[in-house]
Length: 481
Image (tube, rainbow, N blue to C red; front, side, top):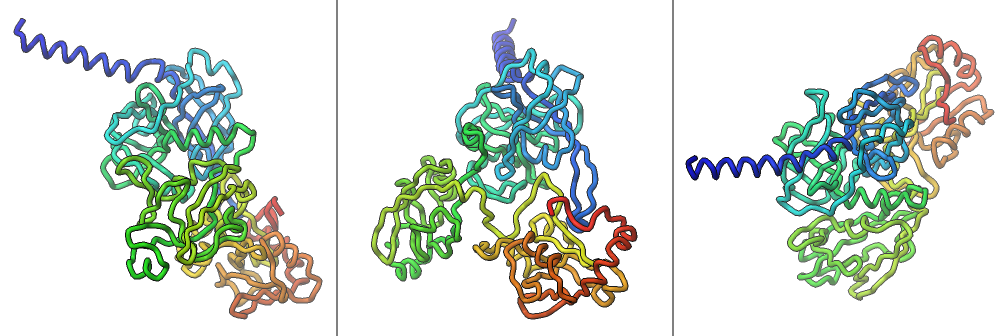
């Protein structure tokens, strides 16, 4: 045989051997297809919902658990899973979920599901240009799909499911609907979980990196899911030389300027407005607000907060009116349960609402804003602000159903309410109690500009049942009220 033909044959055999190891049955047997039936709420008609069916992917990890994306199982009402090489579906349930980082753990009710499987283990954060393999069940077929690519970028990005920013890994492997929740493998170990892609682009996909996954799993060890520590501060970059001069910051140094501090921020007792944070745990913050997490690789300064759990202590280097200060801050667990914007993103629940005489009220949420075809710019801007101790939620008159009582008001919607009969309120629950507990003849709703809507209480209560039948509404209020 010709020498060059022999050489090509040897290369082909070696190539086949590499492929076989990367797609070994042990890995494939640990890849799961997830079948989800979910109830999708209608925030514009909060008493209505619809049922959807969707598919996703997952992987078997230690403790007979399945790791997947939160958005694969969000709002689920029924879950089934199927492993590679099996035709039987097994019923599953959500064991734990973190919507902020788009991760979830599932439990299978029948433990026979895990026979002939081996839990996958975790690797380390990959490097740029590392080869990775994506496993899952994307659209286009029913069997497992395996695609390969390289790591092309590592930095903080917006997670589409929560809208929050965390470290993410961009890869160029083919990712399609159905891949979500599947593992990204390098050297036989999980280095990330596929979560999203950029549509109308060529092979730009993202995965939740292994560091974020392991933070989630470590967080759960005490039996409580706290999530990632939140800053609770507004900051600005300081790149302009005149601005640096004004704040007495050396032109060669970087840092972030504190412009607002939330009332329940972990930093509320140590930071002041116009403090400049120049370093976190000794890691220098650059003028553009980034930090080096590897040589010549930078990401958002929040990286050195994200690597901590609630209860950890961090050290901040501060420049306060030109003087250098070192502060130590305990990341308070109390902050893990706080709302850090007026409009929160809701999951796994039906919207809150109640109706009085055809006037439908609801708290303002991101879900509601994103459901509306109208921009509602003032509401959107207000929703981004920090809540205060006295004001935790924005309440709106969502819509007005046509009736003899509400003539002239039918066109009103997304109207922000500031007071009820001259009384302010903290949240939607307190607003509901103010309205329904009011014994005056008129319920007077007022916005921040002083405009008023007036409802006759007795007449409104008198037509409730008529309106429920007319508009096929099951209840005058949501179950949480």
